[in-house]
Image (tube, rainbow, N blue to C red; front, side, top):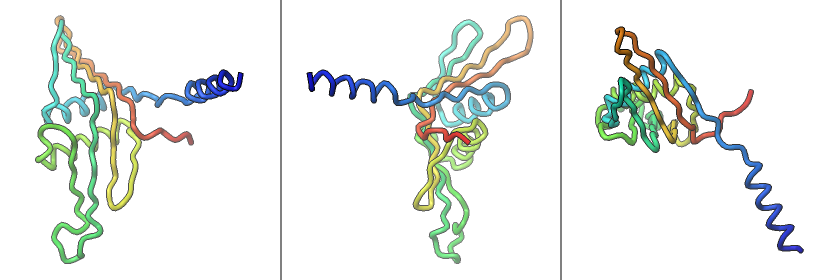
Amino acid sequence: MKKLTLMFVLLFSIASQAAPTAIKISGKKAKNMISALVALGVPYEGAAGTLYYSSDRVACAVHHNTALDPSDPHFNRPTYDCNAPATENNRKAKALVNAMITAGVPSDSGMGQTWYAVTNVVCMDHHFETSTARRYSCEMTPEVEIESE
């Protein structure tokens, strides 16, 4: 009986942990996210007027460089890097960080760095055959839990 009770308690505690809340964006925010992903080389698939951009995990770090000597030319000038194919370009990585911030991706900080990370990123660029209109949307799961206010 003790084993059964312990198993029930363990299963209940695992099931009661809330899953991270997905972030959903559309319009200009999603367009900026897609542009940043494309610039960093995230691949896409196309089908019936819609382009799909997806990645299992996108993570970026901002290195604030405040620990450098004040005489260093890089002192207090942030650098950016992401886990995407073309991260050697600081401007492209910065664009992705800015898109993640605008999308509401929560951050974690420490040791002079700030991290932004999301999993299960899926973005769509919908093209309409009868007009030049487009619709953009993205959904992603933050790795850092969004704190309630």
